[in-house]
Image (cartoon, rainbow, N blue to C red; front, side, top):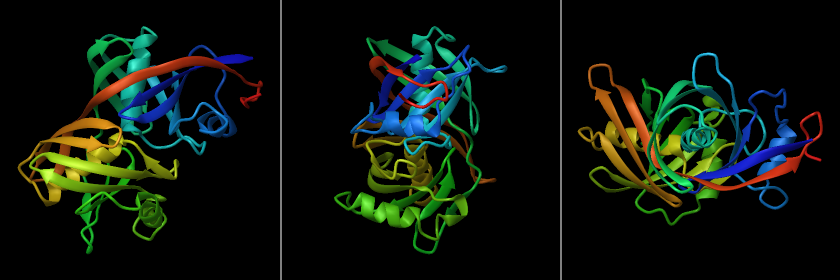
Length: 273
């Protein structure tokens, strides 16, 4: 059978999206790996499956490019909200289920195939700074944040070593963010993502982690951060409760764009033909 797919990107973080409402089709891990391959497939950092939800407008199932269903993806959440808008799901504000809980996304503006989307992220109640100054936290996915003087570096080499190293072992590996502080509330960053096992042009949960880590360690009075990733700019805002040292009302804002639409032949078992 043939199944339709859509290619979306948010600040250069790109995804294949599938509308699986009203069907028993669920892509296999091999299908995900094949369609995400940049040489022989569509090419993407990950894939998302949109399904029905009993409690929200829809449900989001995110897979990294290596196949298995994974943890939350912030830029993916913004892209799937824009995809849901294309499908006529919900209004300007939509709710959806993800692996880390319920999220709300707001379509702030629309211009052709591009939207600006504001996504509510999960609360962060634990931030750990180790003896080397690395910051570990979970913003829907586990992250390590390392502050650096410059970003002209071997992100893949250093990132993969940290991702598979002892610091990240308790979470089964983490995404690694290298962050340069440009000024008050201004950051630039590069991210090595687990599951992709490479640098991505942007990472939404990583941008969120970078902003919170900077507030926690360097800029305690700042609640809004502008972040420059290689693929585009993102904004992270939040509230911080000093008494409990928790971060709530966290929002990630940035662009989401539909790149193209196509179809692919798949077998009944979900494998690509």
